[in-house]
Length: 98
Image (cartoon, rainbow, N blue to C red; front, top):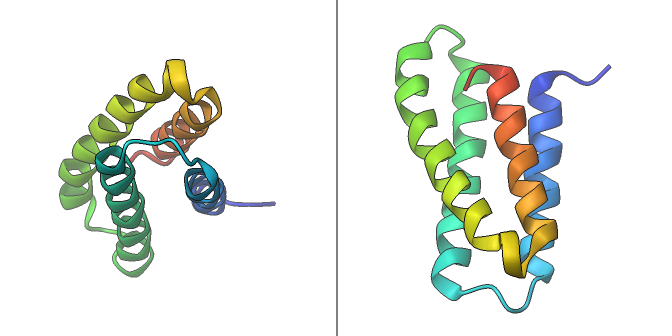
């Protein structure tokens, strides 16, 4: 059975793939979302290596979730699939307590 971490990695990969295939995304939004996805990967890697460093992750996660929420709002009208995938990533982060 996949762990929450595995589910998050899958959601991030699906969002990354969809973002790569979306041709009409504003370049700045694309860049910021790409950086946010990379940060999520780094957070997951840190979490796997240092499971007791919850305080630092909590601070990092609020920034990540905020940026993802902003991206989801921006995509709602023009890229509903991307908005849904961003929402899935946010939900997966929440389930993990990130």
